[in-house]
Length: 202
Length: 202
Image 1 (tube, chains in turn purple, orange):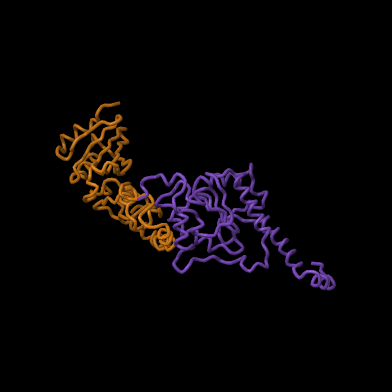
Image 2: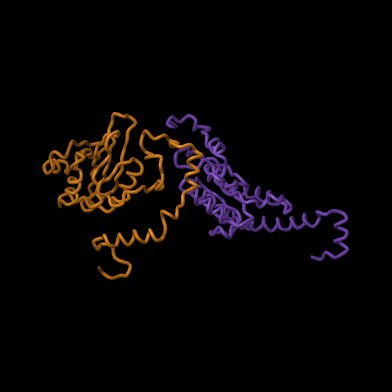
């Protein structure tokens, strides 16, 4: 791209990282402005997510108007709503089917921690199933909240570098079929907040 | 309206000992049935012209925190023609044999309702053609979640729950072939009331 022989020579003399940093900038710019979301809406957060995509809040401003209902063309998985154990293998399969580069947003209290559903049927935070980049708090979050989370993801992507060898690492399931170590899952599933007062925990 | 449903004296006259007692609660008549003759009573209510309870609104079950109280299987009937409702209950010992006769042969709508009561309470419906879990997945091994002796967070640790959930292969239970088999069996079983997709009459 207009970089001549002499330029190359100059660059290699001054800084060997010059070209990579600029390529990073270009690639990260392209990626932030064309994130294709894979909507995984299971509950009321999905309603707020739809509002975010609709005209008043307008995700299209961030290059996200194209909802990718196929994981194979998606960049960012947005889990909007609580995740029952029955859906755990499904979201894991979707995540595995998404090609790199990929990111995940956990939208709302239930996706992030199980929320009010501290019961037998609900995954206590999707980070026990897939790696999560941004957690959006709220029950459900307002569209502004989700937009803020998306902008934070933009910031994260802007800071990525192709020189980072661990950047596109696939986090597959462990030998024992879990994503995190069992102790970590148990720790993350510990009751907190009002849940500690409920008497039927057995 | 606090008066007893006119079906109660008719029931007592026709089926005497099968009717244990009747009560009016919040304007609704509740009839308590003997377990062994409940199917006869329900069939009579459906087929007798004066009664014609042709619509099964719901089958559900109730277990009370007071362990002395029996577990109730509840049938909510409606006569579309007469615009009349009737609620019937079978009382079972929660620690004993939870077994009642299926009413699938009377109302086809009982199929999934009975599966739900089986899934959540562990009540076995004798004569049901396909008594599998319906809400929880088929390999769910923790018991029946709506029973009072079921701990709210389930029996297993969170790590074990996540591990089992992630090892599920949803396709094994819901493959297109299986769904087609079920559809074919239903078409064969049916008495011709459901029109075939080909448009012809059987």
